[in-house]
Structure formats: C-alpha cells, structure tokens
Image (cartoon, rainbow, N blue to C red; front, side, top):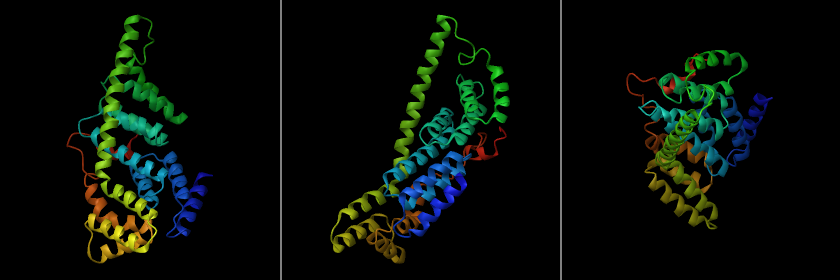
Length: 278
C-alpha cells in the first residue's frame, strides 16, 4: 500500500521536527519517484528531500534529480539525445519508470527520423502498462528497416547495429558528463550547506559552531534578520530550517535557469505531463 506508506513516512519526518528522519524522507522520495509520471512530480520529490540534505542517500537523489533537470533542459534546447539520456537516467538511476517512459516517447516525438527513435520507442514499450503498448508497437511498425527493429541476418546489419550503439553510447556519456558538471554548478548553494553542516557536526565547542555558521551565512550572501535566523538554525543543526532559509536566496540564484522556457518551435519538455501516450 504505497500511498499509506508514503503518508506514514511523511508523518515520521514531520513529527521529528528539527531532527528530521532522513531515512523516512529518502524512503518516501523513492516511493514517490516510482510512481512519478511527469517532471513536476520529480521536482516536488527534490524539494521534499532538501531538509535531509546532510544524509548521503538524500544527497545522491538530490544531485541525480538536478542532473535529470539539466538533461531535460538541454533536450529542449537543440540537444535531443539529452532527452534519451534523461530517460535512461530516470529508469536506471532514479527508479522512475513512468517518467522514463514519457521521456523516451518525448525523444521519439522530437526527432522521429533519428536512428535511435525506434530504440526509444522499444524502451518505452517495455515500461508501458499493457493498455499503452499497442500504440507504441504500432509506431514501431513504421521503422521496419531500422537496425533496431529489423532482424540482423547479415554481417553488414550487425556492423550497422554495432556502429549505432557505439555512437549512441558516446553521445549519452557526454550528456551525462555535462549534466553532472552543470548540476554541481547550479547546486552550489546545496553543496555549501552539506560542506558547512558536515564541518559543524564535527565541531565540539559552541563558539566553533557559531564561527563556522557565521562564515556560512556570510558566504551565502544572506544578511539582516534572515542571516541571523540562518546562523541560529545552523548552530542548532536544523537542516530543514537552513534549507528553507536558503531556498529564496542562494538556491534561487544558483538555480535561475530551472524555469527557463525552451526556444520557440521546440516542444516544452516540461509539458511532458500533457503527453497523450498512455
């Protein structure tokens, strides 16, 4: 009963207050990703994880979700294979098969003539519920001559298939590498939270805590009442409050491209929720 499990995990995390249970948040996040069917749902999972930012599993998911966001953005800005990379990442790294299916279909919709469009449709069909497979199989019939669909019965066909796979693997590796670097750049605020709170947790004296937290607030560029609140939350090791105070400032600046619209003429990849494929 996933819905009840998520609700109970949320209750545990909420009741914990300042000592948020990271395990509860991470478990709820993974269950939500397993049911996610669109990008707004993935964004919401990431926001729910921020209060547990010092937990290694939460950090990996937060970074992975940011990488997904980068790949989808690039996919709608003239790098279609980034959508394919995002689909594989959502399926294999984030455990979000419903979202992965929609991203595979989005890639095939964006570049139906690409060599890897039929492979994307085949991957989507494997992830689709039974009722949604027929339409995908019907689309695959248009690619009867593809090396991914047509039986490979000759050395030439085998060679063409191997060449397509090598080129795809190279392109997807580059897309993931760029996404990893860009995610780190955009998430500079979150990285500072992790680094400072890790050092704070090792400090034994209150004055050391205050010095470290004061330097953190200064580096984040947050002053006034909010800066005072940030320092106090840091000293208390209140990661939920720290994340909340950072979100309107540091994180917003570091993440200024999150809601950028794709160029005119290209499908808005954040509208995948409106995809008509079952």
